[in-house]
Each structure stands twice: as C-alpha cells, then as structure tokens.
Image (cartoon, rainbow, N blue to C red; front, side, top):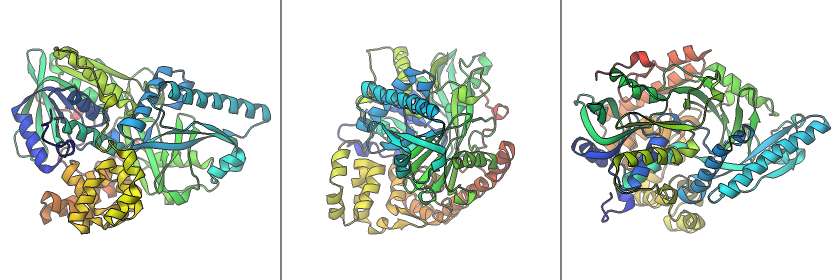
Length: 599
C-alpha cells in the first residue's frame, strides 16, 4: 500500500529512481500477486490487485503497451457488429465499460467520436430494408448503452439523408450511398491509457518494472512460487528470482509460451491463443474531407476510417499470423487491401503517397476450429494450468477491466483471507480527478501560464489534471515549452516528462508510445530522433555514445519497417523487419522452436 504521507502523484511516478527501488523490491520481497505482461490487461490486473490492498508487482519484457495494446484502432467501443451476431452479453459488457471509462475512470483519455454507417445505394425496397436493418441495430446499441452503460458518456444516434451524410463527410461518393446513420463510440490513445493504468497501480504501492523479462518459473513441488527475471537494462547482471504467492500471466499472443515453460512436468495449457494481424494506415486529415468517422462492411470483417487529431486512421486487416510476434510486419498486400477497401467509397482515391504512417498489431484470440480469425472468439478466459499460475487471455481492449477483475477474483479466492471485491469501477485513473473542471477553466489556465489555449487543450487531452506538473516543469525550465523538432504539435516537456515520470527508458518508447510521432509524421519520427534523444539523455544521464546508439537503433527500425511495407507478402515483410536487433537486446520471438528456456 502507498505511504499516506506521499501524494498519489508522487507515488505514481515511474522515474529512473523508482525503477531502481522497484527492482530491489522484486529481489527482496514476496508478493501476493506478480503480474507478467505490461499491456492493458496486465496493467489493469496490477491495478485491480493493488486497489484491493494486495502486495503487487508487474514485470514487462519491453515497454508498457509495447505489443498489441499500442496498436489498436484507438476505439473504446461496444462492438456494434456483435449485435448482428447476437452476442448480446459482449455488447452489454463492453458498453458498460465504455460508459465507465468516458465518464468516471478516464474522461481525459476517452472521448466521443462520431461515426457514420453509410447506407448503400440500391433500389427503393432495398433502401427501406437497409435503413430499417441498420437503424434497428444502432438503436439497440444506444438502448444497451442507456440501460447498461454505467453513464452513457456518448450522444444518441441520428438518421441522415444522402445530403446530410455528405455534408458531414464530403469525401463520400454520392453514387454509393442513399444516406447514413451517425452514432458515437469512444476514442482513446491506447498506449497512454496503459501507462496511466500502470502509474495508478504504482500509486497504490505496486512495483512496476519494464525491461524485465521472465525467463522461467520458480517451482516448489508442483506449485509455481515465482519467476526468474533478467534485467534487460543490465544484460551482464545475473538472473534473479521474484517470489509470489500467485503469478498472473497476461501475456497476450505469448500466452502459450507461459504454459510451455512448464512442459517438463506435463502441464497442458488449458487454452490456446492464435495471433491475428491487424494493420492500420495513418493519412493526413487533408487527404479526406469529413467531420466524422466511417464504419464499412468488408468481405471478411469491418473497416474503420476514424479521425485522429490532424490525421485519419484506416483499419484494419484480420489475418492469421505465425511469424515474429514482437514486431509484426505490414506488407504491401496489407496496405493495398486497405486502400482498395476505403477507395470504394471515397471521391478521391487514396494512394501510397498519402500514407504518413503504418502500424501492425496482433490480437490474441482464443483459438477455435474456424479457419478465419475473424470468427474466433473475442471473449476471454482465465485458466490455472498449474497451482500458483493463472493465465488470462482473449477479450478485447475495451473490456480489459472485466478481464483483470476476473483473474484477480480467482487469485483472491486462492489466497484465502477476507473477501476483497474489485473496486476499479469506482477508481479514477491518475489525471482523471477534476478533469471536467480543468477543461472548463482551460482559458484561465492558459492565461496564467502564458501559453495558448491550444497548448493547454493538447496537454489536458493527454495528461488530464497531471498537466499541472508539465506546466511546472516548463516554468522551471522555459526551454521545455519549445516544440519538438519535426513534430511541432508536441512540446519538448513531454519528452522529458515521459522519461522522468512515465517509465520511458528508450527513444523508441517515447516516439512510438508516449507520443505517436512514429505514425503521425511522414518521416516516421526520423527528423525528431536527435532532439528527442538529447532531451531524454539529459533526463536519464545518457552520454554521447548512448544517445548516438538510441538514434541509430530508431532510424534502423524505421528503415526496416519502410522496407517491410514494400514486400509482397507476410514472409518477405517479416524477413525485412526482423533484420534490426531489438533495442532491449534479445532475439525476436519467431515461434516455439526458438523457445529454449532451461528450467
């Protein structure tokens, strides 16, 4: 638990000094719950456990949200298409979580985004059918949100004529639609939400350590009592043991690997996870004229076109992936598919010249018999393949809190003692407390600090009420108010803050996850790398050699990704991408044949 004499903010700072202290705790203490995996589910589980008063640690091999949790469609949504599949319980669950996030838990990070459902051009009877069919679905979506949404947080839907639809989205081709229905879902910066979850867990006393890779389990008889960890920031240091009464593995597409670590005692995994690759494109806002997003039906799934600040996000694909899970690669085929699908409805077709950024992520799907990953379950499962070890996998980003509560409920029952119900539905994340008042008073804040209202709005939408700490940094060092080279929408202070308070250890952490410069600029962050490395170097004490190495690695990563996106298929794209060594110094996980862990 947090020392009452320490503020919630100070206790939640993931600073370099805090990492050293938490590493010492990992070596010296026994925890009630040790969470393996720093994605949204793992960070959510650590927060859930810490909020129940348990002694908690979280370890992550790379960076917070380094995998799937930073590569989503950036939506907090109920799953409109699940209504069509009659999976009403999934819609109920997700809309409840959407309402909580938008109104109570993270209103600074989750906000409404309007989305159009275009009604296709057809003969009069078909037009009536389409409007009735889609209209009923969206009305049911709103009804579920009203009944179960825990505070709606989103406006109601509205029917639009063809002219009304094109007024909101002038780039829609007039000949492909007869009208549209506008509804609202939530938009989120997925990586920032994960950082806030981890920091909120830390503020409640959890030890949070990234660049700490689990290389094996510690067992006593047939019970898991901890893990062996390698500190990837000190590769020459020996591995060490972390003791825990229960280990929770929230490792996404690496879930099967956790069970394989116990294969010598004949443990069966209890669940199987398949990786589905989802590719997204980022194009400038000027490439498409519209004030709302789009949701389009495709032959295999759905396609979103979502406004994202000064950009649009277009995605996603949904294809099986069996190659490098650490750095999934987008191929030219993926990019062509997305462009072909979206160009069906646009009056000015997009080309590869319009693309600013591309990113690919892997969804962990509970494996079934279906050939298509789009048909695999989006539900989650909690299993205990061996006493003391629990795996949680599947699900979707929006319902991370439910997944976290489920696995910690089970862990609490195993630990015994008094009941400890989850209370994360009542616990605002850091930056959420007082956000509505801070947003209302943003003009006054701007005047007091001598910055524009636009700067304050930008900071509030990324940090919430923690904005005051960035403003204090700027007041103490005015140079931090300057825009970052190559990415003028970001302040230099944000780079320093990421290193000093948000656990960023490498240049890639900042340009790819604490900010989204790697996908929001045509240069993919290359023009910002030197400046950002200098700011991080000052914060973390890097010498010239380390700064140069960080920049060199980042530029090599960008070059490899660009090359992979010109390759014709998954195999050649993967080969191009994995040529760059990981900045944290271990080989990419290309499959089970490379899992050679001495237990």
